[in-house]
Image (cartoon, rainbow, N blue to C red; front, side, top):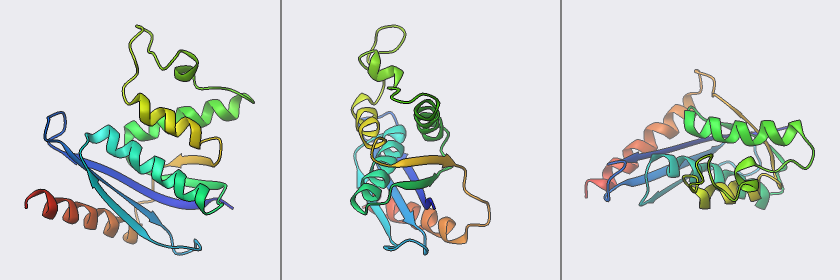
Length: 158
């Protein structure tokens, strides 16, 4: 049975030299090691989202959890992860088109966040996942998101 994991990545001052990001990961009560993890670092929004997904997959792999549901409301992350998983399921042995193209886009430029996408590409071979939008009545997840925002604002403004 897939283990539900809720992730959130946020940033402020996005696209500036002073951008700061944070992410939260919430493993539900029905997992063996329920916890919330918050991390703060220099980054922008998309990278914060990717860091959250990477850490969730790393933790799943460390815990020998082979099947998870990643819940996120973040469109960029949903699109990236859903594309990876859809293609993996569609063809046995499929490799990401970005990886096959040397991590270059259709114009020959390196794809944005190549380093993090490579890490996701590596981790997706260890953990099966699907990406869904969380249900609206998830009080604990809403609390995690609120706490992440509060934590983030306190640190940033000091």
